[in-house]
Length: 144
Length: 111
Image (cartoon, rainbow over all chains, first blue to last red; front, side, top):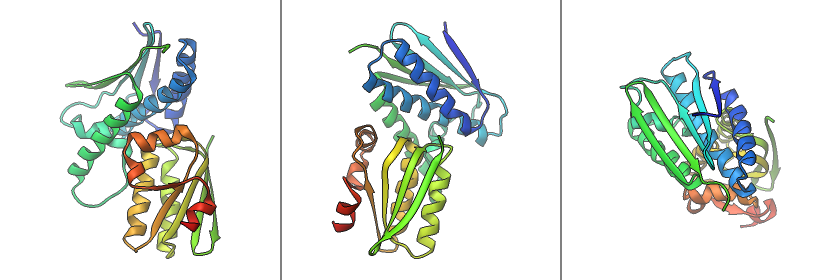
């Protein structure tokens, strides 16, 4: 069960608010200061990705971010972008520079880049895409 | 905190000093600044991120985009960064192989 849940309107301006909450909860859970930076970055990436997916799909619905203290910290970022929009390509939405050329290939490349970043920052990462949207789960074990 | 941008010339180089947070919200402002510089014929760029508190993948994407633009004109884009938390993101993404990262503007323009 989530201990904190935030509904985020699909506007990139609010992603930094989610980062602040993530940092605060990471500190509450005794995550070391060095890893707190990773939490800040990873949650920002995952949330920015979801917000961009909502904007691209022209959805007004909020992105939902669940924080679970379990021990350590688990953060689940849920978008509600239905298939077929929610392909792997969408996982990458925020990384972009407006490079011309093959947009689908570009998005796929960006997807791998975002996942690579998340895997470098969190202890465990999983991405589940279903009919009702995509959930990106990030987990940190806590004290090391 | 928002993004701050200051541009100045050092010899043949244009130095863009960035402060604040480069994230999915503010990165378009940096992209616009880099595009304007390239359109104005400035192809030797140093982007100084020493006063940046936060850099996400969108920001990295903008830097890569800037690098591609200046390279298309036989130019260079060098990054000044000594902050470990920012350097880590360059390493994770493999971009230390793409960008010349310097520890000062002086060393970037002298290299």
